[in-house]
Length: 564
Image (cartoon, rainbow, N blue to C red; front, top):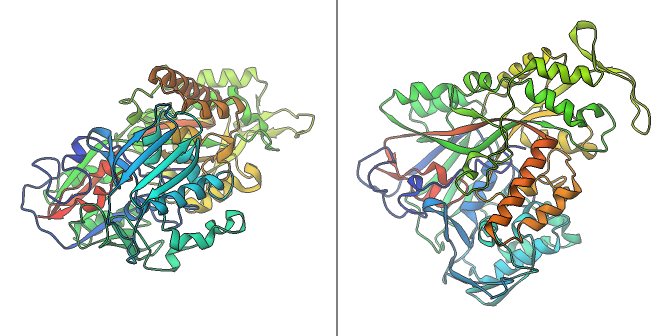
């Protein structure tokens, strides 16, 4: 998957980006917002994006803008604020028992759902208990945020008690990903073993019922979605009277509309347009390292029936060494990226989660050829290597090392150009690849997971990640097959380590295990990591208060911008 998926772009919540504090309600102090003008309430903030909302149902959505919408629509107990610090959203305070297994959250009173019904702790308890009940099935996509939770109680309207089976190291980072749904809307879909939770389409019952900063009054999957302020929101109100987010299939068109004054903010500037926008005094361009890592995804299902040579770590090592990442950075990202090797992004470095021992492989086609020679894959006609015939359960006749790479068409980078570079590089080691259209993210993910991960060999996507490494680790587990696991990777040792790491309340112990897990994935290479790209946004100077690094982490992403 990609940031698309999550998932993203769920950007790093940096201190400089959140100088005004989450929630908005006032102009940012000087600097960082691209304007020194006055503060004006009202107006419609028009946002352009090349990521779309695939669904307004949290149990099935995979696109980044869907998750951003959930942050805007639904109460969270906590969210990220200045300096990547977790702060209360709906919760005003929290405490835990001496054994760390019971956490009590005190909530802001008086909040209402957008349909006027009271927002209470009972909604949170119902949501949490429903996710826990169906964690192994229909609620799997949301279950990672509640790993080790056994139940939730609501002793009164403003108190939520969460019970864990053991003390957990990352309770608050996990709960930042827990959205509270309105029980009076969703309870009717909890039947049929929870399967109906995935059938409900809030986008077909507008306006949505939301308890966060906004509700959605208009939805178009590949068009414009309108967010209107929820009058019953418990937090600081939106500075804009509405936010209209428009999806563009073509980033060039989005930038043309920004320059023509048809939108106010572009949430991901195409890399080839950065230089010209920086020279235009009408706009403020903001650039920062992001949480987005691009990769070549490899089908890693141990049961795949064909092309099983791709399961061999030595073959993957050869493929990995035969990729010129510096060329990709230069050509595809115009220099706004860095060669990368880790499953975690650069944002994990500040928290101490990035294993420094994992290094980018050198670009060495000679060494890659030596590896493939040693495995007996001889060069055949047309400069394409041949895999010898195999026997046994998964017997396959001799065949060329010729494969497809699926490229989704809604990436925030030039996936076609990246494919071309990889194809040219791999041709030098006798591996031939063809570009396979993946459609949009939902269609591409369907191809990946079809037939128990047996219908594809390679894809090129990206991941956008959270601050705490738990979520990204969970995506590699067997429990996330058909939810977030897009490779079919299934390492029983890793699966057990994932459950263990959250229980290590000693930071050094948890860090050591996380580093070990990163190293295991780097060795097995279900992904060939390519680059960690920068986050680049741009806005018209008629607006200020933009905090792009809060995207997907903080309601301030939409509530703070204001006219100047």
